[in-house]
Length: 417
Ligand code: EPU
Figure (cartoon, rainbow, N blue to C red):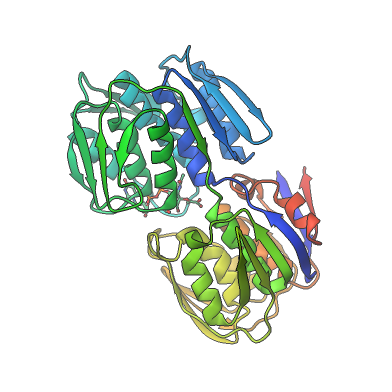
């Protein structure tokens, strides 16, 4: 069991360098399965989810080196084996092996994916799309056995622009016969990152980043190269921290347009920040104004920043309305926030957050990854000492978080019991 101990209320200054995006790399790694060539992926974050995916890849026969944030994957001797529950259930993104293995071998056996408990998180949109592609799917307990004789391009309209389903359809269709068109596709920046990688191997994916993606199937793929985009959620988390405690905190290696919705909201609250090349420089502001935040799909306010911003809202002077629209269960951190002194009244997926309330150091839990980020922000602004338990969740998505915060002046340590 790992926990973090933080001594709060320290001003922070200096530079935090943002790592590669978790939600890109977790798809880029399974995408390598599609080629027998060599793949080089740069700017790879050293996070638990990456370790888990590399374990699965090694089990399938990949030869991997991971040095200085560069991953080299050689799949010459890959074998199409069962991905069992022990591996698949450790993270959500194991479902990308459905798309890539069926695309390459026309057959895959894989257990149900895991991931944070933030809602029911079905995969019906993925399954519907696979079935439309002619894939037979048999559920044996927790195992999906999928097979198809020949993969053919399809036209598909997604009832919801699911990030995972959009990527999975891309993975399954790059080697299919004919053209696949995804209408109402997800537009998150991670989708374009995956498309660039596939195209570097010789795939023909057009329109990624828009709501209509066209994939012209090709016969085979070659070597691949890609740089993982900066993590917009890690960026947003540190910008929020800077808005509460920063003294010219520089958050660098970022793409500011990827977090425009957050920057807009912070500006509305009165936060002062500036853009300097690929950096955002942010300082703490007194007298924050109350704002309302509603999460939505990209380019709306990201659901993954909903929990961290809710801690920020406790420091605004007045009543803030918060609404989560993507997941049913993303307010499980609220009791912990209230235990620290916040005034948050939650009703289903909405909350009224009334501030400004001082927060006090307490023993709290990270109930999921972004809840952990919310508790971290709370611990940083609280008086006294905060202990955050179940921090394994946080380590799944934030690279070297303790080092990064220590370097800008935070008194924080990780304890592994
Ligand atoms: N949904 C369905 N059926 C499906 C797929 C999705 O009902 O077949 C629902 C989900 O239950 C959810 C909503 O649609 O309510 C959004 O799901 P989506 O498929 O877009 O998300 P995802 O691919 O499961 C990825 C990230 C999430 C991030 C979302 C939205 C990965 C591994 N996960 O999830 O990241 O919240 O996109 O941007 O890429 C996180 O990093 O904390 C995290 C949860």
